[in-house]
Length: 564
Image (cartoon, rainbow, N blue to C red):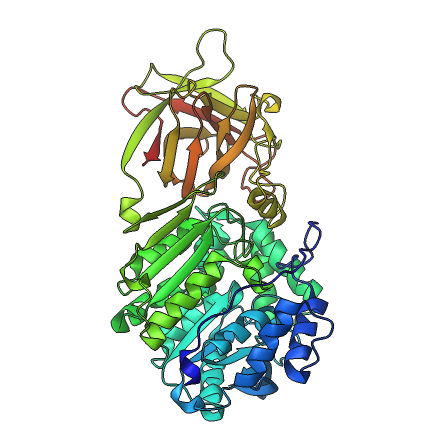
């Protein structure tokens, strides 16, 4: 029976040169993927590696992949057609499970999934991949996972069932397709399982983390859409423009809530839909904590795989056919929940963590079990003869320090979205020269050298009081691992913005930094840097503004460090 066929191993593909991406998928080569698909259709494997040719020969015996036009949702003037490919089992198709794969935010569309869709077909699934509206050869306009996109997903499922049949159905998406997959599962009760890779749970938090505009994320989405020749709807252009120009925040948050799986999580929980997430610790497009909120809220079967890298980069090798643990787990997840395969994944821990930067894999039964204990480090004044304040285990006397907010410092989130993540995956995380950080433009607090390695696991939390010179203010907290020579690697970060304070009146900030899994070697120090400017965020500080950061005996400032 075709539905019982096992998965196949990966094969070799040369990675593209690491450069600043013009898209969210700089490692994917359109020509290589298209040659794979053309060989799959024609049977001519002469230009492919032997292992890849054998994979295609095996697939052609079992499935007949064809380009299709999927009727999409009726919107405005009428329905649109979605460009797609259907992998239908040659025998017994109606007795096989199905998988629908909405495309990511790229002009490559369904082609991103061509290798993995073939492997799902080899495993006995009927598979439909399609390019989301507004991208590539699909009609319509980009609505950013709005109602038309969710209706498109249901229409795609209709099409799969009509053309091939399906006993049970899973949705799998990467990035943009992952958000659509979750939203579709909340609305369409025929969906039995979800795989969401590099995804979001709360789009409003992704765009306005702690009330701070995530301008780099929106600029990246706009740039990738432009590079792809995507057709953005008027509402999409308006919302993206509002984020960049700092207008209509409430309207944008309402727009984002309608596109956030977290808004509809009770619908998913009502049916206990199994959901598998994969995410990067140092994710710079959709920060990790907002996806963790969605993960926490789910009550059915769930699993999250956290990796070194950035948006979509940890799963990229699987897209080009190389072995990849995230895709391997995706196959195991759908095999278990759609085919009742007893492969052990249902009994395994919910949380899998790849630790920075040693790549050790750890598993924990739940997210709550990731952090074993919390250690509180108090921010204190600089010791005599030192420039940096201290991070120590007990509060000191009252102190204050003033920083200017207009100048950037070497303390930044990353060099660039995505490309920095590839360097991290290769074992070359960005090195920060902490000695170049101006103390006029940043507050700096440093611990003593670690006597033993410190295993940070979970969400660090910062509590502090500051007084802004203006009514609106922003700071960005960066947490670093500093070697003896003063060079550092970033552990995590978070922005914070206050929009309605009175100038000269204290503001209390309680900030969750992004979750992390990080080992600080013995002899290294922990460093907290607060500054008012970072290229990733739109700050609210007016020109020549200052922040007076303070700590009192009644309300000391502190950093809670999660440890294993």
